[in-house]
Image (cartoon, rainbow, N blue to C red; front, side, top):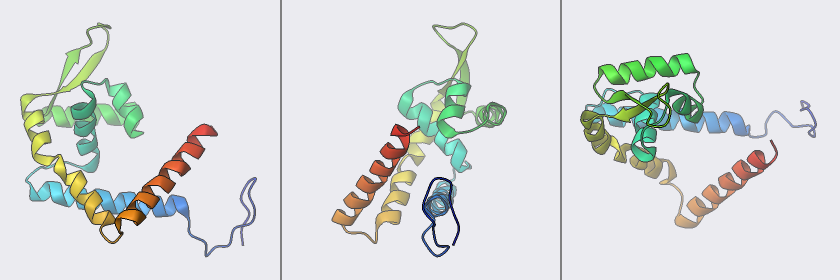
Length: 154
């Protein structure tokens, strides 16, 4: 049995939520990368997330992307460089702050996004396929409550 700061003792055979969530994320990202590869898209999971964020939110700064993906700024710059070399994104001046650059999808990036956007939905369907509708709803509701609890106790 081990002790956690400010928590009751926890036995070693209890489920470990952070480890379980990490393993689910890793498995989902591996399935997504395989799906992307099957479509001919040579993208990593993180590159996919950058395209998704820009496609759904519009042009973002490198800093905004880094914060959204929990990435450091230097790694995000290199990731954007790689996507720019593939022709999927371009840096454009920010209309409100001339010192800042926003990362936008190119036409090729928009076409790539349309070709791959269903991959994530397919992986989610696979991940939840052994659950009935009520179980899926319960799982998502419980995870949202856990998220809300943690966000409200920062």
